[in-house]
Length: 128
Image (cartoon, rainbow, N blue to C red; front, side, top):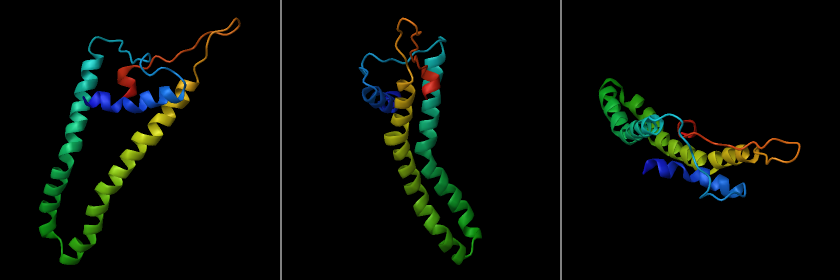
């Protein structure tokens, strides 16, 4: 499932925070929340998968109206854009998301005699 793949950085962050990743959970507070989160993920995943085809069709529509030198100037952007997108997405997935989640998990405090216990209960819709 796509959802379980996107939760992996959260599990890494719980390990870094010294918590058991199997005991940490995401909650949903409305009956339809998890369903609509999965629908949003499916729509976003479909757009990501379909984007290369859509971009190709847009370029094929625009390319006949361009001069040859304009088409040649556009070529480096066509090659670099998907590569830079994948590099940025990988950086967010493997580095920034686990680090940010670790930071937020580290803000929890255990209750002592004079302090109130504060614990993170992340919602499914807020995580994604």
